[in-house]
Image 1: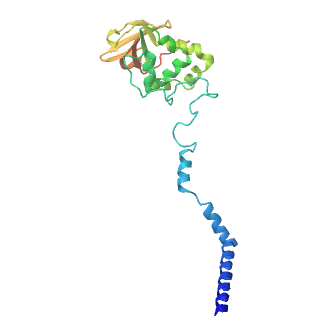
Image 2: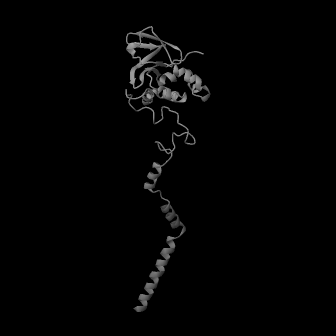
Image 3: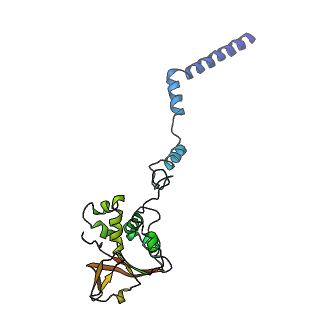
Length: 224
């Protein structure tokens, strides 16, 4: 009986060894590799959240190359639009607050007129909306925004600014206004409609700390 128990124990040990050998064969080895490389759902979620193509502002996004140059204001700049225009803000601050004036804000920055319009004033600014700039002939805006054309851009923008604070009620039909750039703007009124050199005033009397803004639907470019 004792010999039979010893033989049974030996057979059991051999059978266990055989099973272990089967578990490490080529077929089982492949299954084990698949298990090791199976994607982790949690890891996939983490990777998606840090993927560079994920929408949202990433580190360094919106910065000029090198990280030191001032970024141009555009419609996608996080500093432009989304804020309220208020009488306690300066003219440039109110322009920057209005998303529909983002192109003008960029042009003022490019022409280095921000400091001038931050002065005491007061000023009356006829501010072309984005659609007015988009209506310019192809390539005109891009050309004006080039560094070598800064003087011309500055000249054009100065012809949208008049010294003094003039509300719509003070703009008389047939009157002419001299701009800080030396050009003449003609006022025409018909009923509730007010036109400045053929540009309609779309949003009048935006009061600012150092002046007043009238949003217009056309860029006032004088021929050269």
